[in-house]
Length: 355
Image (tube, rainbow, N blue to C red; front, side, top):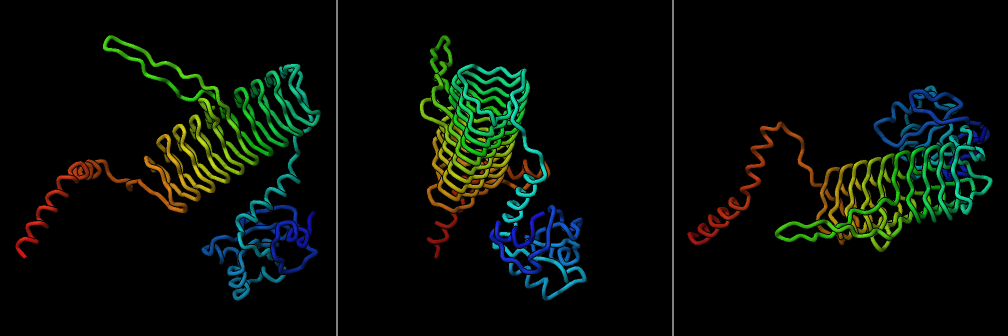
């Protein structure tokens, strides 16, 4: 078991308390025992943290000052890991303990897997049952591809990435190191590209060939049943460190910057460019061909129909829920806003004349 001083050094936290104490796992405040670590990132839980039997706490300096000023019976032998970002330190420490206690996928080439002879599969990889790997695919070291997943021709997956069951990766997709792609995701399907060709008597939607790729950077996580379309002629790009939730739709030629987070059911239309460090709430949607500045935050259910050029702004466009009858009344008012504005301008004009 790692000691307190070892953990403090590894996760760059200041240590307060006995350096030689050892810990075996993390646990919530209400369940943690003397050999476990918990965390405090919200001041609302200070009292619960004070009463907790956890042997160690990850917390900020402000929270430590409060707990030391209000000691409890459990604080005498407790260790504190003081961090500028307790929640992030908790997440990193949780990863460490998870890797230490969870059996990793051992090298395996399941006999039911179908692998083209031209594919490059290092001996350290784990290839599960009924996996299909196409021609000229190249996998890095320790790549895991679990059951019923398909990796089409000329795709590249770098070291230590994990592909969960029933993932479909279309041809020429590039996936970086340490990526995680969850079940049901489809990477590299055709974008929705059709040209109208109609006359007075009929016509058709003419399919535009989707010949670009999907390129995914290092340390990207893609949620279950998310779809990322390949580019029409240029590439669809997901920047390093970005995290994408379940059931997200990313259309062709979209470029997403580094370290973005996109919550479930969001949809980004074709050729839109999202900057770095953006936060996109659930079910938010973007029109096509937009440019979104770095560090933009978009609340859930918000529709973005124009480009955002100033970094660091927060956009929200959702009405609070209400009874349907009340909503209908407000909708009528909204439809008449232009007439109301004209009347107010006329009243203001007449008032100015009288004065």
